[in-house]
Image (tube, rainbow, N blue to C red; front, side, top):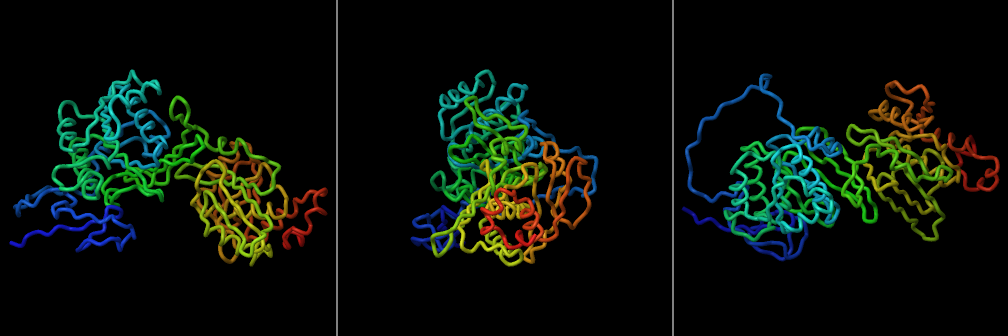
Length: 477
């Protein structure tokens, strides 16, 4: 029998090499390759020879007599929304975020809410001592909750302790990078240890019916540290986002086998912990300057929730040979495409201007429906014409300049009407949705119609002052 050979595994990306080398060929990281035992596979089980397979029962796809999986509701509405209606019993959830963003605060609040309802909840910390967790709970006013605490990193000891007594409804592991299993010969935090520890904890969750939450660190580019296979093993991946200096926190569902993805929960960090934001649209629009040019309100969708947010643009003459293009909260390549379409199909020259575009409030937008709002903000800033304060914009812009329809138009319009908006610029094509009666709809089929519509709103007192900077299509309108 051939002797098993050790493998050389990159601790940054998990790539396997035949020999040690200073630089990983897969991710380019230096000094990240470590020799690990060949037994450190996904199952984290040492080779014990072949065994005879067992016969198991097969289920039918069309069986309807089996009940739906039970949900564990935390009572925190924003958290339950992102998970699709609560944590599913026996599921494993991976939550990641930057240090200090509030992951531990959110989870200790969720554990306390469940414990107050009589559920058994266990919080295991591999980074903090029990007294540190207690101090945080006292600061948040959660000392009366019967949450069971432990400071342990051995997976075997954790599973043995959790298997004793009543089945816990929720188990929090903070964090998975600190866990280790004796079945793998490598230091804690390595790819093999993270993978093996996660596999053992997921196996316990599936067999016992307890919902397990694994907290993961993130790298400098925002990705959850460790092997990507861990994200494939868990049932849901949640990302906790926020910016330094802002109290706003966003919990985003990246993957969910039991609910919708791209759902978000909005929280605000206060002295008493994380508070839910019931109406995030009003929060994002609370401090906007309605008379300033270059600001457009975008009616977007985050998962199943309509969300109104302000898109701000600044177009200024550039002293450089290559103008700047700075984007915060949106895709920079998408902005470059919108600028090219405006120059080609609307006659708006932006090549000699610096362009700065940001999404107010710290939210990051990924859907193409924000194209029309970004274009409106750019034209408004260039021509110094403020957009109507009671108007919203949404629609996708194609390379031909046509404004394409987007989904969930009815929900976007209802949210705009609920917040007091009176007009909406939207694609002219597509299905005719049931819009609220108080909304005036301006259906646009081409990007040139948007420039003409903005140019028609020029105030008489500013017409002479900004005529030299007005878009060509707006002057012709």
